Image (cartoon, rainbow, N blue to C red):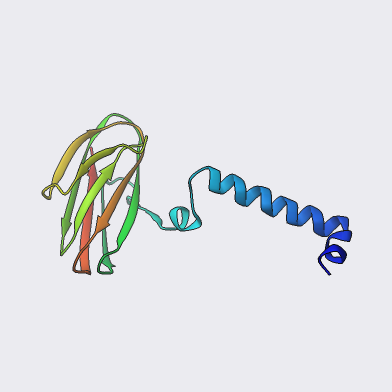
Length: 130
């Protein structure tokens, strides 16, 4: 039965393409959950501050991404039963379990802010880039 399925060159090509894509994605160290779970912070035009109100499940985390245009200062402020970590564009940890607000010099690129909670609940995240 499997041999009959692959006799069609079109089906074999599709299966091969999907297999190559899955292997390539896995070798890059990413999972679909990694890619889909990053929420971009949106700054209203003409502003340098973005705020979100969200909920985190006990024992889990939520990741937000911030695009920084150049060498600037970024302030991360949270409220609620959460802690956070900040990762620079290379993936190196810039801060973890620090007091809110946290301010740091940042370079151009995509920064990640990971919000976690051992209790779960609602929180506010405010990020300012100047």
